[in-house]
Length: 207
Image (tube, rainbow, N blue to C red):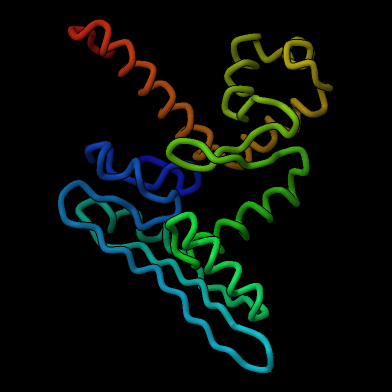
């Protein structure tokens, strides 16, 4: 299985791109053959002006999914929202064509990561949300690639980015904390670069 469940949904390496590119990163893993079943559900109970939202995302079954059961099993979390907050969440989810449980889980996930790494922000990407160094046009995965190209020279990378070396170091720390996310983003970029070249040179083959 490839993907990290954050930038790209977990999916079988043999799965056709069309089966997972339009899925949310935290959707159920995509197998190679059997139809994937999305078992995310949200249960809302109203009492005393509050709504208790239960966000429970469970991986589905599929050809390759059982091997990943332990790694992808989500933990149910209960949150208390006011009626207004719950209504706003549902409205936003409808506007973005997402499920309230999915978008709520993403808000929590990104909020926790931003609290840990204040200089990191998340922006909409294709096909999923992408971690960026705040105030720049640089996604974290590209900063990692830049530092590698410069022989791990943080000062040169900082000069290139026109940002303090401390911020570059923070981006690298984030990448080290979430290596699967960064790998998935780099793999996707490389695949798209190759596909673009292949359209110009149809007989081009990967090394």
